[in-house]
Image (cartoon, rainbow, N blue to C red):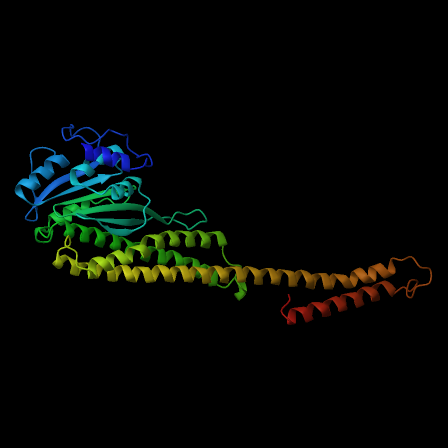
Length: 372
């Protein structure tokens, strides 16, 4: 119990959990009581050990220490009180416990004496009928993984990124699951990166749509006036959020694939190389998205500037045409007694004809030069 008290003292107050705080973990708690524990199971020889009752983490770990295998515990947004008991049971490092409870961590890999602590950012593509200045394109979550010799603990934050289907797929592959906790770590890493690939393809479609709108000629083949710059900027912000999830994870995946670690099975380590390759490809895509959106934004602003210049040229052209009759009317409106053609019967139609010819000549000249 002293270790648990030390953990509680070391962990600073965290953000409130979305779930009602149910107190510290108790091995004797009724399974029907609300808890952060989503699933807790013992795996031996690659197969889930079936039991007649709901296993608590304490009971599961006791079975593992007695009969072998490993325990896999899944938690969703645990509070400090809910996680402190589990952390004490498995001897998790207080700094890693603090990160797991507080969330909002950067993707990383940290090695402690008896465990690995890995943080993944999960990305979910938000479907939308039309891209607007307020569209949410990607939604992020987090999965923290504690990998030990005989245990694997996942702490998930956010509404997306459920690992239930992944657990079932692994249970259908006993040969892989028999490799131990490192096989689960690889499967989660592969699952997260596969999600990145799918989101990158969807974001590519959104960028292609905006790019097409920007560079599609306007009516009559004229320069397009572009699209709402706020839409491009919003898309750039979402790509930046995507980039923050992908870029920091590349180094941890390279370490897992290249550097021998006693908690990672050598056969599993080879598979991390494939994950790192896929992640590198996604990172290149995301960096390309960022550069492409910069170019699209600049092109859109340039088109808006060109369209404004065209408007100003048209306004200036019509002002030049209107200046001719304005000048003539101003001259003949000065009420002098001795002015040419004022008493001539054909004076009015002749002056109007000359004015019209001059205006028509200016109009044709400006139109020939592309001002109108």
